[in-house]
Image 1: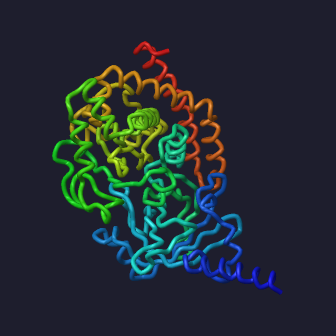
Image 2: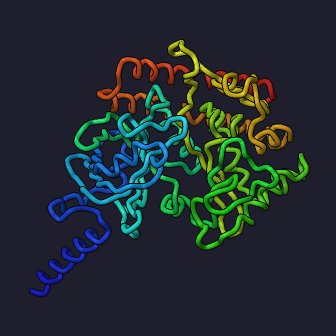
Image 3: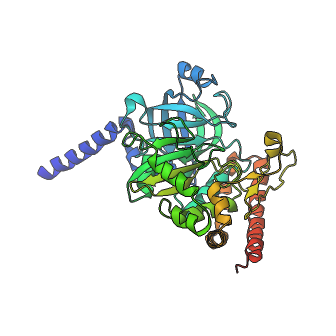
Length: 424
């Protein structure tokens, strides 16, 4: 009798805990076997269902309010098991890629929004759902973040989902791990002080440690409640602009993980991430500081990568930018800025100007190129293409073939740059 009571109590406590975290409805108790690994499983396509009431839909269809969180419900199904529907907050995501709800927008899903504070979905507070509208192959982010992680640079996990909104299918979406405190706690053993999000064209320039949590040239995504200043960012900016050469490299080492930075720069350049930090726009990236004020750079927004040239009408044409030059272009540079090239990220350009740093970067670039082969990276890209083939039209499949061909060409370009710089 005692054993039976203990067993009943354990089951009851498990159920109460799961319900208190908003994990599943009582009729779906079998879903307790699902984990985050199911959300970010790239060997299957899951299903996510959003039920959006009329009032919320009206807000999302208004460009002025599309990025304000509104009420919805969320249901997740993987391998025959379901969680939900559960209450969530959702908003639209994107700048140039922002689309109306009636189209194929990307979403931010908040499981702990407003009155839902403390709620989790399989331990997650947030989830990003990307429509991949700027990725003709649907493989760019999968491949980019996989390569960052293979090189030891903390990057989000990815998965595939068919998204349904109010019962209607919107096709294939990328389920992307959000970079928040849950992500940071899983990737770092030390305590995070701040997580900053970079804003395009601002870079680590003097004066850019300005503003508060949600304004200024760097936005604070985590850590503001505990420390409401940007003193750590100011120290990084001071070091980034300190002198040059050996003195600069030594000073930078006091406020940044230099090895991780070089790996980050090497992967960004290998995947052709012109919309990232080391590109001409100094865009999509995060800066994470620990309590000692030491920074690590983290990737984001890696959809326009692997040489897809969406600025031309020509199909399946490649785009490359230089791997070891302090300025570069991007597909829309002429129409946007009326010039051929622009200066790249400050840390990257100063690294190229100091031989010790440049050689170390090129050796990391060599390691990335080798990792692509040794880790059977192209094979994983092919496997991913097979997984999503039912959701891929003929033009998407053709672009997937071009991506794999581009990777081989990029490896040849890396080899040529290494040879030109005397690195075997």
